Length: 126
Image (cartoon, rainbow, N blue to C red; front, side, top):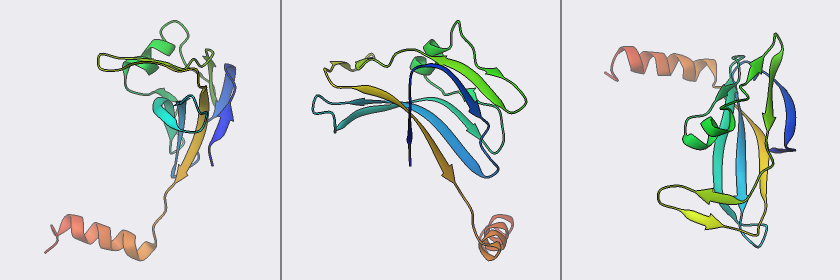
């Protein structure tokens, strides 16, 4: 379940083993319910440091204020979320709301499936 994050100074732990954590900006339509766009900002996975997501929007957020990492997590500053999207193809102004969300995804497979995956990859499925 995504957790809404308020703009400002943020300290976030690294993602646990076999987990992906993402920080995204979600822009809602004027109705406040329909999602117009979801933009990745940063991620941490499998106990690694937080890193800036690919793309010009995420990069622009961290030009002056970089992600600062410590032994347990990373710190960064999120500016106020505005509901304006601008790119080469899209220009959209919404009176709706933009919010930041932190979401975690876990992945696990059974030992049997792990062996099957290994055998398929080393035998080329033969």
